[in-house]
Image 1 (cartoon, rainbow, N blue to C red):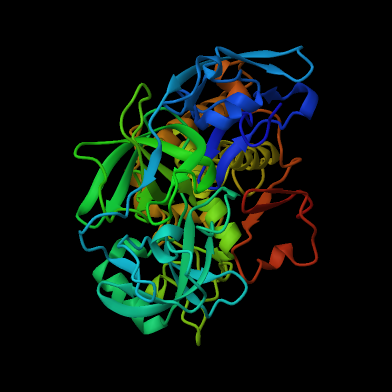
Image 2: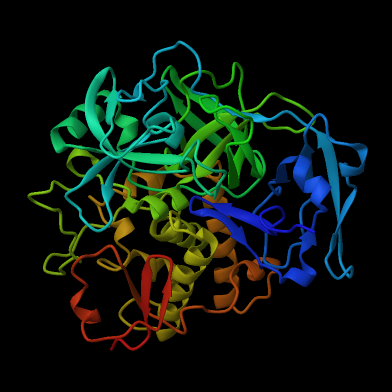
Length: 493
């Protein structure tokens, strides 16, 4: 009987990868017979209609078996090892998934040492431990698509050798690994990074986005221009690398499945960046598949595991998309020497003001709903103090030097003022804000479930961990909670 890696209980996804509600022990986990496992090509869990709550049930699971799989493999349900639990599934005979850097079209990136096939470069990254090192990101089967690939191979981008291969996963041709990524990095100089970003501004990625519900729009930044797609769910399965003989080269675990608009992806698109509606990086495009009974035709891997496995992080928006090696940008906490001018809000309602505040402060964090709810609780905690911060939600949110997203000159402000209900994260922020306003007014409201208990433990202050110099009020203090990138404090006088 077989369980991993076939049936993890995936119920949500972010740019950092699928979110697991729980990982059951072996006895209560779904299992496959050895016969079924031998013929299984992939499994797919569709995305929900909206972000799932922790108590949500499993979504249907679709199993794709090889064309020659015997009828006994086409299961209608999975059972736990102890036989106490059962899960309905749909089994189909399905096409295999093939990496898409084959063909004769010229790509913007390839391994020149091994005479590799073309693909696309996605982004410029910086080293996590050594901020002076810059890297170009693409798919592993673009930069290292041959069993002969090795460290220091020359990587050609836009027809010129500009980088040296440094790290990649999986290693093709050696064995059949289970991997959450198909990605590689090649080291590049700062001047070359400048040139690339000038030619391809989309490579200067600074923020990671989120995927969480059915048909959420995304774009693939292909060489011929952006190509629209819709998120369909999470996929695990065997991927075939055409450069290596055989049809099962590696098992991609918890990848992203999406339906690409016509004419679809094609040769040379492997390694392209996947971005959300705000242009934030979601992951890399890895492979395509013929349409069958399932409603997706392309696969990618989320950016979170890529950055973690390869020891990199996104840029910060400064020169060459990153901090210059000889003059690193230091982000400092604001000094209240001069009171800033606070922008006018599109609406005077407390619900709209709070929604824009929590969206501006916390939308781009790993778990946006929890992070935004935490900021909303800080606003409520300040309102209850009835101090110089203000007595109403609007007063507290708009107090100078408190929530910097409202300060004139803040790079977040333009987005904050323009966002509307076409943005799924703002819709969520409105629901959380409505719950917070109802709670402060002492009204019971169905939306109050969106707010939940205070995870900040009564905090009235927080700051982002990206600040290289913490604010003065936080010195010598221990945070009472850390939620996403924010450190919260409840003992500030």
